[in-house]
Length: 480
Length: 143
Image (cartoon, rainbow over all chains, first blue to last red; front, top):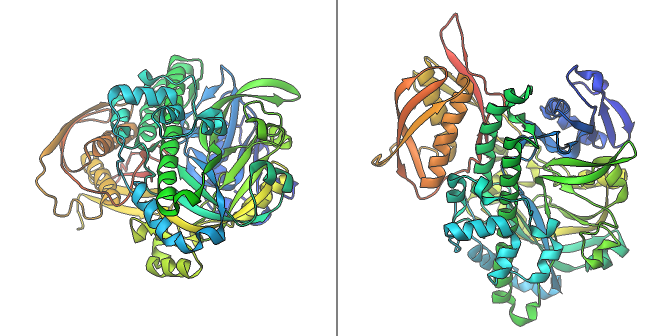
């Protein structure tokens, strides 16, 4: 696709008109400052976005956020909403890592308080939190225990003494989707997940200790309990093998079922069925169960982080409070305005974050009048951000923001270009401790493999979709 | 080690692994797909494998050869993760464009190099070149 084929609607917004391809049902929109658009034109992100615009029942526009890059089926950073309940649900619009997401823990300490204990803290976090490919954790779920996790989500961890009751109010959907049905999750998926609670896995998943470097929005920062110099902890992981298997199982079902509903898609990875169909209902219930597993996973990891924190810092370490937990690979039933009319929609977010504005009743009392915290992790050597969801975002993007910096370099290319031991030493020199299972894992996630997170976040800020609240700098990174 | 039956090429992809496989036959194409997947999971894991004492029967029906291949690899990937095993050998008993019956054999493994979340249908298209008789497809592994 050529840039000349796009309409520029604003400095941060581009449109591929519906007439670009005959099978498009809506236009496609790209949120990106001009320099971020170039890499999207270079890979297959925008062709994939055009394919998304053909989904039966899609409304408004198919969208990508500024951190978008090519994926399979949907581009990563993709957002699409379909009519409820007869529009389609597509596992490809959620991804294999169902409810991959991020949470932020806020400490009562400042950089000066932990400066001399960062090395010990990073080693203790690495010891407490199992990481790496297929690595199991201390929690081994029985059949009954697994079903309870899939039904209860984060609440299960709290009931087991691995979380605080107040945490639940600070999680998207309170850490539990009620539509979950463990009976719709295959035995293979349950087997893959039975020892994976409390583990981060590999790839781009991490636990990171950061310090608050800069505040942009005083009112929101105050409401979030964020202050300059404060130490916080970011956790990024998802539903592990269980979610991967749920997606695999149901893509196979949907590839086989599309004919029955007269649906043809340009890419099998966009296989979809009407939500109200038996296949759609089974997938939705299984996806909700996998999302609950992911929320429970992040809650158990939070318990491990709190344990490591206390082991190293003792009582002076104080409490790690959960600011918020957001999903970025999920489909939710939400109400949004389309052409001025409120409609129930199936909102697919694949590598995109819910970013709801003030007045959203699900938010806890302290946040309801301000808006939802939106957490944007960068790469291990750059910055991460805390943003604020807005009403403008509700109108523009179904209340959706970017989810990270977005890859710009393939993992293989990163491994070829990066000398991992040297990078680790450079990061240490910059005051960032890295604990990782392998040097190749460090190389794949090197800062040069990612887009400029500052520009990505700036796009969202200028679009008014999510406003900058605070910038975070990494101090210690734990990776698989 | 070069294999005359099939050729595997790893191609660029921003976040995942894109592989192009060419082969002399449909069976060889499927073997090539398995080897490509194993190379990502554990480099040289099937170079000098231990005793292949774990076996799984595979029995798949699909609307076409492309879905058959992706579903075949997905089933082995599931067995890989649930059994923490690497399946290096496959014996086909029956194969058509829409059906296959096989046994895969492997060994338990302590750790993998990379996680493969899934074998995707994206860009996969099993094609037989009428002139050369060669089979080919692209496969994208989500990692």
